[in-house]
Image (cartoon, rainbow, N blue to C red; front, side):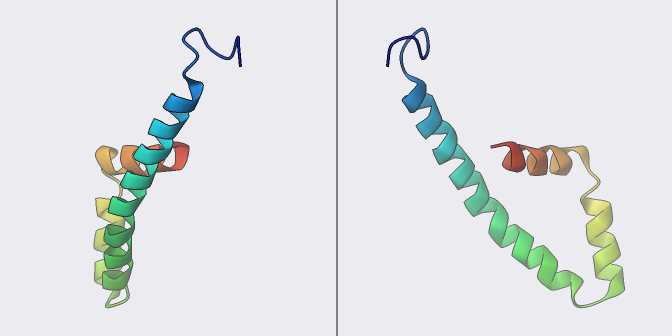
Length: 68
């Protein structure tokens, strides 16, 4: 596949991005399920989760998982 990229390693980069997104998703899902589970306990727990998710690092991480 000539002309796909300058170095011809598009498949390598795609595999690395795919692997990275899979690892991030594997780390994210247990935390997500735990957070959802704790919010079922009370309205205060849900409000605390909403406050926590407003942090820039959390928003960036969620955005990154969606983009990858």
